[in-house]
Length: 353
Image (cartoon, rainbow, N blue to C red; front, side):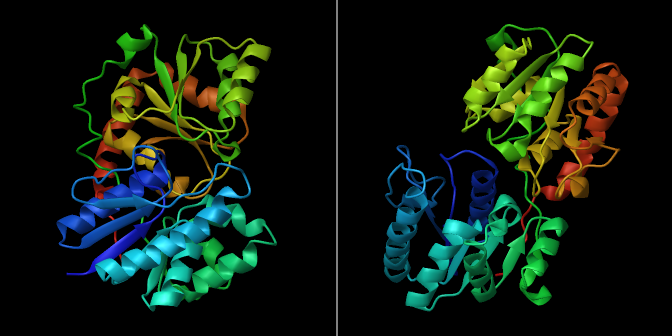
C-alpha cells in the first residue's frame, strides 16, 4: 500500500484547489492508498472520511505568512514522512507547497510531485524574484501535473521537459453536484427573480467587477449573486454603491455551493486569468448553462454546446451573453443538458503514481 502526503489547501479551506485535493484524496483512498494531508492553519482542521489532516502554524501578516509557513510546514512534513513512512509527496500549487515538498524531499529522499493549478504559473512566474525558485521546484519534481493544455504550454516555456509534464483535468464530485439537488436558497434570499451566479475567490484575476458592471446593461429583471470571500470584497461593494447598481447580493464564503447553484439560472465566470475552474465543472454537473471568458483553460471545457464564451474585461459582451440566455429558456435547458453529459467525463483525476 502506497502512502501519499498531499500538501496544499484542503477543506475546511474553500476554493478550487481545496475541492481538487479533497476529490483526489477520496479517490486515492478508495484505491487503497494511505493518505495524509498537510494544509494551512484553520480553526476547524479535522480528519475527513478517514483522511488524516494536519496543519502547520504561521502568522497572519502579508509577506511573512507564506515564508513562515514554508519552514513550519517543511519541519512538520519531515516529521510526518518519518513517522508514517510516506512514499510520495504531492504538492498542490508551486509556492509555498512545492517549495515545502522540495525541502522535505531533499531531507528524506522521498520523491515529490507538483500539481500546477493556474495562477501559480500564470501570475507568480512573471515575478523575476520568484521565477528562479519556480524553475528549481518544477525541474526537481518527479512529474509536473497541470490541469489544462494552456498551463502545459506555460510550463514548457519555463524550460521544463515535455516528458516531465502530465495533463490531468480537474474532477467534479457528481454525488455532491447533480440536477436532483433540492434548494432552499431562493427562499433564503427572498427572491423570485432569475439568479445569475458567480462562485469563487474575490481576487483580481476573477474579473468580478466586469460582471457587476454588466448588470447595468441587462434589460431583463434578474439578481446577481456573488458567493465567496477575499481581498476585493469592499472594493466590489463600493463599485455597486458608487455606480448605483441594484440587485447585487454578496453572500460571503459559503459551504453549501450545491444548494446555491441549484437555485441559479445561469453560472457566470468573468475571469481574466484561469486554469480549469472547478466551478464550471460543478455548474455542468448541476445541468446549468454557463457564460465564461475565453481565457486560460476555459475553452478546453466550455464550447457552444454547453455555454457562451466572451472576451474578458468586456461588461457589455458579458451582458449580451447573459441576456441571450435569460431570454431563451429552451436554449438554457439545451445547454444545461449538454453540460450534464459532458461533466460525466470529469468524474476522476489521473495520477502519475
